[in-house]
Image 1 (cartoon, rainbow, N blue to C red):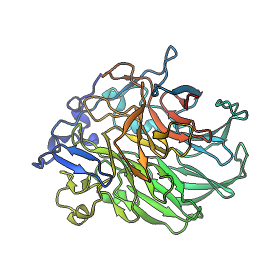
Image 2 (image 1 turned 90 degrees about the horizontal axis):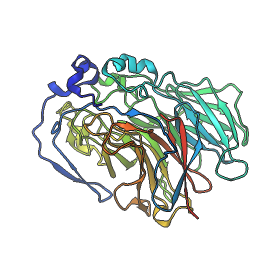
Image 3 (image 1 turned 180 degrees about the vertical axis):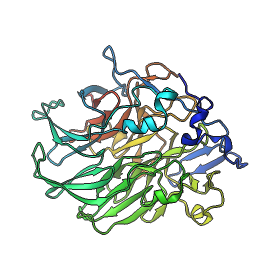
Image 4 (image 1 turned 120 degrees about the horizontal axis):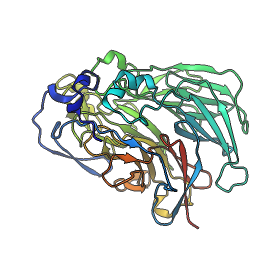
Length: 438
């Protein structure tokens, strides 16, 4: 059942319903991105801001996601607790971060009263990392073990030298690590404090290193939707930070990114890319999420503008200097689709069209009249550049067409050494494996 913004006036102060927003008179705008793709942006508030939460019913009767012809989808693992993110170690182990938005957050925003699906209020975060190992190479893990526990909403993971790094919501930690070990008992070291909490939560923190391991990049989402609670709480947020492997030397690598989560390097280049969740409450088609290359020192608009110099009507005239310098992102994605996961396909098991392209996991919408996302899309690349718009790859998460019931919600995507694609499905506590038929 849809939960319209008009039905929850009592919570307007929390969700920022748009009845009092200034309206900027604006015609539809067609934008051509640096990659040569186009997107048409409607005027803000052309449609009302709607709340429409999914009902997650779980996979039943042998149902599973659907991939294109020539691919097989199998269950890689189940019985997890909100598997969000994955990392493949150099020796081929799969590490899975099990973490979720704390139930206290949903209570603070009146989740029970406005009728959010029980599957949205996921309970307390598991705060652990689980290891999977496939010893015989048949695509099914035969070793499963808790790798590291007692964390604080972990997401990003990284092996660098003789250290294992994990990004908790409030900081980056590192632990002594040797290839092949199946658990970490040693005491870790917090090498970087990070800001946590905030109205919109955005608790996920991802990490990735450059090719030579000399730098680590940390994605930190905003504390709010559009800075509505003041920019003081946004310090060091809505950014990708760069640090040395010991946590020193922090600087802002790129800014104005509302909620960057997935990060990866385009194959054959030194260009970092990220998948970004854009802001809400401007209508069904605003603002598109996006996949973009990340320019060193670049500013991408948040919270003052979007898709270049389109001013947010709630921040008009505040920072014309930043609006003018805002970078247009490369690949528009569907608005409110919660595009989180990102992995470039750098293997050769899939057909040629997929090689060096990007897979993006879309967790799915809540802020539009009809649900969108709830799938994995693919963006073709050649020579390190996108060559076309996003296309569906892994679908079948909806129980019925145009309905509000979904079987699960995809998040992280990871390419395995054998060329298969793993996809976390956090609300069904499952990991799916997509392989090319031989």
